[in-house]
Image 1 (cartoon, rainbow, N blue to C red):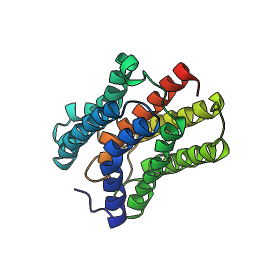
Image 2: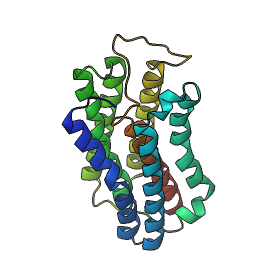
Image 3: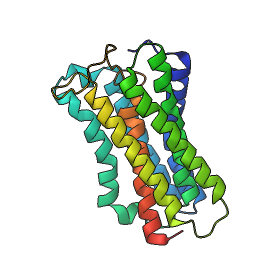
Length: 227
């Protein structure tokens, strides 16, 4: 377990606990199926509980080489399920304000900078991941403020948030994976990268897959309904 700052713990756990509620709210306030939102939220609740155990048990590091695959598998799995059953997930219009609004939570990436200052995470990862998350949150906020009353929601605005979010994730994965002790380690910082341990490990293990899922949900919903 990381000797994390109390702010880091509070921020991450607050975001972690609100995830099933936000899914339910997105479907409910979009006028879609409240029952479906409840079922998806419950699924994320179960997944989140499992990933909490994975993180607290330090499973990715204990499994060594196999453990390195947990993060990429988790990043892909929820979104692959969404694409396979997209007609079920997106059978009704979903409000882009809620879908894009989820990316405001990306501001929690600022905790990487806090833990860098405490010597828990190297700058080679903390700067691109932390500043990238803050930038995506700022872009999402700017888009929401600019187009709050726009109908339909501009395609460029939707795709800008998705593109910025995905690029940030790719950057974070590259510098995170590249600076961790793996067979393909590219960067060798003086400070070992502890991002995968509790509590910051909940970000790559659960909160990032959740945000990627919302990017995909936003893209699929916009393509189908052109809101």
